[in-house]
Image (cartoon, rainbow, N blue to C red; front, top):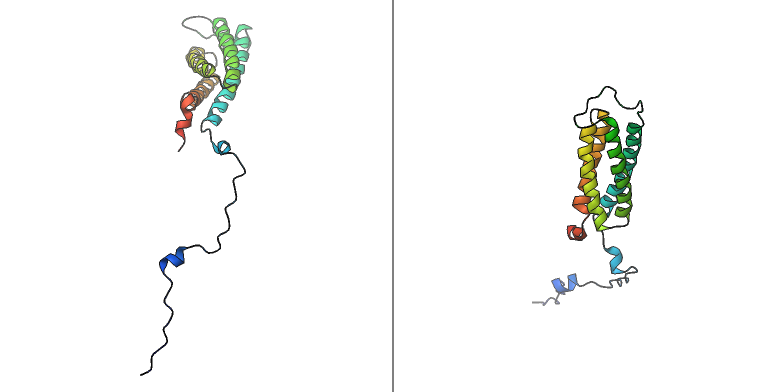
Length: 164
């Protein structure tokens, strides 16, 4: 009987999983802090921009109301005051919203809370202004809702805890 030469054994699992000739991993060229993502920064900047736009719209609408412009519906009955009074309120709130939007761009926590207060005040004021120009009042109201969402959800100091 003839003996067969010993056949080479199949490679073991350890030998199969061991990388052969793996290229070296290049060192990171960026700081670790450059990979930190601020999840709410876009929303806060959007809310600040929209707050500024709404502030300008309120200033223009308030000046038009005080000036007795033909822009508004005439013969409108207001419960608490007249169109000029609401125009002055819009001018004041619009100017405060413009100043607050600058503070939001400067990432001030106090400006964020002031923005929440002035947006809430503007929402109430738009309901009073509804008979004079209904479409504009509703549009500004819904933009105020989006601004509130951005400032309250993503505007705080702890927004870094929202990272996934």
